[in-house]
Length: 181
Length: 106
Image 1 (cartoon, rainbow over the protein chains, first blue to last red):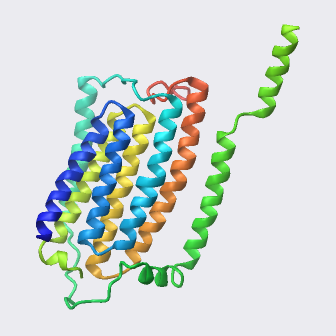
Image 2 (tube, chains in turn red, orange; image 1 turned 180 degrees about the vertical axis):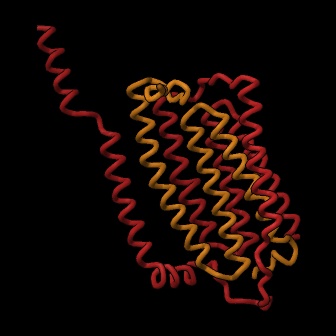
Image 3 (cartoon, each protein chain N blue to C red; image 1 turned 90 degrees about the vertical axis):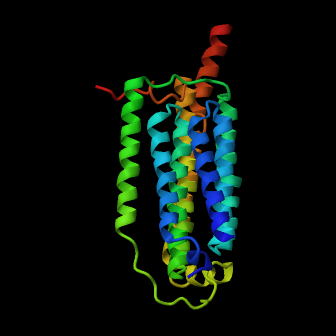
């Protein structure tokens, strides 16, 4: 039963991921990507007993990041522009690079398997918010604080990049005004 | 070790993750819309997250899932700054086609 769930979810996730990069409309890409995230979260929740990571994945990726993408696409009104397809030569090269990547990673993954862990007994659950919080706020407290500094830098960077140059806009407005009168 | 690994070998989780990552690589090379390229990068980050959670469940070690949080934090910061840059490019050039951004080409 668990195996059937895994293979169904895996096939659906791969198909949806292909749709993300093949859809011509960026809005469709975003919606397919949200479905991919739901598929991955379902694997976390149903199969890997990682309930907290699964819920956070939905909230952060499907909820916050994808809304940001959608917002930018709507802002630029890109939802119907078709982009030129690469030429056949280009496509062969791209497929060769991606295929080589796939082949290398696959062969590496099949050759270097992690050692079988010996303890098969029912262990304590590690995926709950309680267990993860205990590790995060004791052993990994310094990286946690560094991550908050990273967020501060990202917020400031995004605001600085995103704001209109106020002085320039005012100067242009004044010039426009004087040229009119 | 979670119950799932008695029915599905860890192998298949690695393969799923590798396939998703390669689709992301293909998307970055294939598409020319900067926003879709960004989405492909998100796909790659998520495939790595999947691998980390699978290893974490396999070894019964919460450190892997902690690392997933840091990957998510970096991804969120990257998206905020990256989309601001894309908005700026669009405001100046009226396009987000990476084929048109050739100001640094010799």
